[in-house]
Amino acid sequence: MSLFIRDNWWTFMSAQISRLSCSAVLVGLLAGCAVGPDFVRPEETKIGHYTNGADPSVTVAANGTAQHFSPGAQIAAEWWRVFRSNELDAVIKQSLDHNPGLEAAQASLKAAHDNLRAGYGVFYPALGGDFSAAREKISPAAFGQQTSGGTFNLFSLSGTVSYALDIWGGERREVEELGAQEDVQKATEEGTWLALVSNIVDTVVAKAAYIAEIRATRELIDLQKQQVALGETQFRAGTVPYSNVLSIQSQLESYEATIPALEQKVTQADDLLATLAGLTTADWRPPTVDLADLSLPSDLPVSLPSDLVRQRPDILAAEAAAHSASADIGVATAAMLPNITLSAGYGTESNTLGNFFASGGNVWTLGSDIATPVIQGPTLWYKRQAAIDTYKGAVALYRQTVLGAFEQVADTLRALDNDANILAAEDKALATAKEALHLVQTNYKAGTANYLDVLNADAQYHQAEIADLQALAMRYQDTVALFTALGGGWWTRLSGKAASVR
Image (cartoon, rainbow, N blue to C red; front, side, top):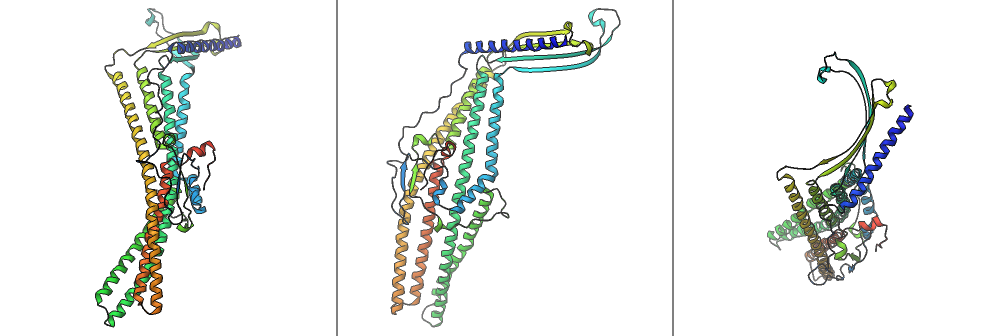
């Protein structure tokens, strides 16, 4: 008998679930689309270039390299390999595996995905069960009786099923909003990844440039010391005034003062790399990358403007935020309308466990509930207006993000063009200084120039060398900035598409 009743209990509950599901499908068909605006992805830009006028196609040759810009070319997923440095590759791998900021962004993305999966639960009936055991004493006076009260046991077992009909689509909009929030976190994670890699490459290049500049400055200091010693000798011989010695000494001390500042920058670069790699500076082993060991890429991909708005993480995050705000309008609108919930329950009650499944103790319910806001002042209305205003603001922020991205790409393209011109001029200045030094050295050997002339020419050569190093480092860093401005090729990594690294 008890087995028969248990089977009936599950049969009854299954039937109620089926009825509720059928009702939900019918109401969904009748309701049609969800309330609120359907989010429409912004139209692709019709602009074909970034700068005012035509974008540069090729730079002048500087330091032996002319950089060519290839519109529409695919960006390699591991774009930093264009610099061809094993040390750089090792630092990036270490950082991608252990950087806390990237781990936090990945955890936020996983949380957003889990929230979305949890949100899908609104599309399923809610099942519940309850078992209770109690000993009670009641007063018959509550029922108009004069008899004495009794004490008894009461055991209850019940199951319930309910389903909220999403007539107006508010639940669907909430799930849509959760999906948009996941898209925000996806873009944020990719943006964190890109920023991490870009900061590493930029810092490694800067450190290599600082070290090269320190080396050239020390050579210049050695020459200045020789000039000071020679000037003091000439002063004691009475051939030059002491003011000449002081002038050279002042210049020497100025060069010496630059060394601690450059060394501090090297230390700061190492500390930053340690932090990016997820280590303390005490545990970090700084990479030894020489500027001469890095390779400047000659072919640079440039995404089309219409592709950029579908690739840059910050633009995608702004678009997803606008999508989330759009869905929230539907949620706020549905909150102003009636909500219907269907429910059913089945159970049994008994005074003893032995008769728990007796047929006389069976209870069941089947019903529906309609809840509608009646008087809540302007609360719900203005909540919807606030959602609309938030959406307008999100759309404006999206447009601003796109404009900022186009500006960054345009600035970087122009910077690379100007970097090449500056470096070409510095190359010429360095070559001229080198030729002048050679001529002075030849004249010195012939006896037509003194040693002070040689030292001055050598100092000018080293000054030109330092300026050339600074211009070269800026060209490297602006190349990094271009890859960053274009989004870094994360979509290539996720899609598995190959892109050449030259």
